[in-house]
Length: 137
Image (cartoon, rainbow, N blue to C red; front, side, top):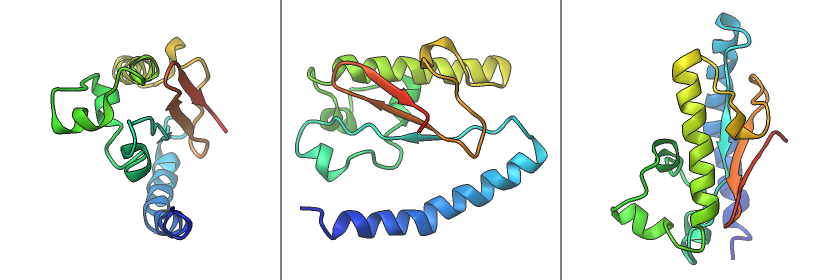
């Protein structure tokens, strides 16, 4: 049921991945102030049971950034007609940000619907089954 697993994973994530991310981005921002962006990928709309088994797992953002949802074993797990609207809208916004960053050095673009702030603030990429949900908490 995740009662013990989820908190344990959150603690490990904070101690390892979070600490490494923070150290690296804090070092980058001393060299390039106002030019460091970070995001958190929260999408976990895979068909059951994969939404609970995997959730927003490591590297699950790559098909969204690249607009490639198949055919592959991975696509067979995450792609459904139920999540298509939100999944594709989120992917479009993420690809637009990658393209904007490649063109200008800044990932901000109208497809986000919000301004992507510099580190230490973090943009959250998520979606419902029908629509993208991008926010800055």
